[in-house]
Amino acid sequence: MLTLDKIYKYEPLWGKWNVENTLGDGNLSKVYKMKTKQNEISVVKIFTIPTKVHHDEFYSNRQFDKEKNEKQYFYEIVEKVKEKIETIIDIEKSDNILNFDKYFIKEHINSIGWDILIKMDYLKSLGNYISENNFTLREIIKMGIDISNALELCHKNKIIHKNLKENNIFITDNGTFKLSDFNLLDDSIEYSCPEIMNGRPYKSNIDIYSLGLILYKLMNFNRLPFVPDYPKKINQDDLEKSQLKRLLGEKLIKPRNCEDDFGNIIIRACESDPELRYQKAGELKNDLIKLMNKYSKEKLDKIIITNDINKKNELTGVIEKENINDIKINQY
Image (cartoon, rainbow, N blue to C red; front, side, top):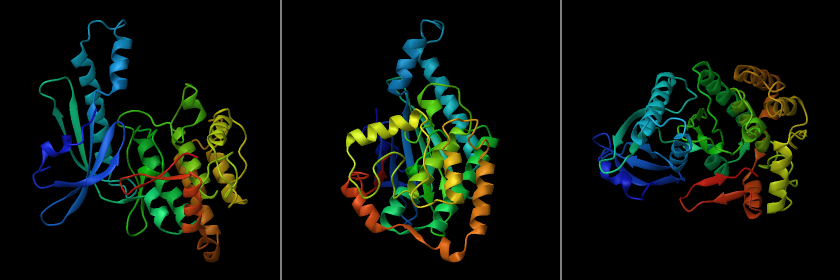
């Protein structure tokens, strides 16, 4: 369990960085904005191993592996996380993967546990960006291309993201989209595909499903499949029914803002049957590139997401403002 002031005992981080404020506060990790005396800005993410899930797994598996003690079991998890971080650092030269600059792991003195801190670039999340800006068709397709490119590289390096959502996609000042938060702890249920949620075997195209759902939502007035059409209000019953339909594999209709080839691409990416879904991220990327080249400038410059849509979705509960000056776009 993370405490509010845990990060401060490590200052100055990497010899020169001090925490300014909290950017994100989840159950398993916290993200902070950092600054140097020279006004350089960066981000640090901190999380602790073991989590409650790790404790539960240890006691569940204990009957099968009585030779392994608690510290040894959790240290092996730390080593796996360390290996994944170093793999990401090795492949981060891609323009579409958020830079993991540095990291360190600090073992607790009086208890079994390790704090892991990762330094990253300071960028605006996709969720935050579209809450403040109009979003064009060109930008939506480019986001799909950029993140497909990042996934293609990850999958070649045997990394399945498993945690793809708007707040793990970031945008630079020049409009390049970057992927971050590579499931270093536990899986996220947001945008999860039916095979994950139903405990079936899965492969790397689960990430394509999640990206497809993000594209679907962006082209459907910021609403996921099977909820009432924008601008109708949404209640809890609507949300539960829509998620159940999706996870049971009910056929999706095209998003309301794309009835043409883009709609077909999105539906294929969101296919509930993994064998009918895109098998490789590169396949999705290539189809999106062809689409971008096919569309006219006038069509690509069309505004799809407006501030008015965001305001109305906020009023109906589709966008939830957190108390940390960030925007979380829920899986509605």
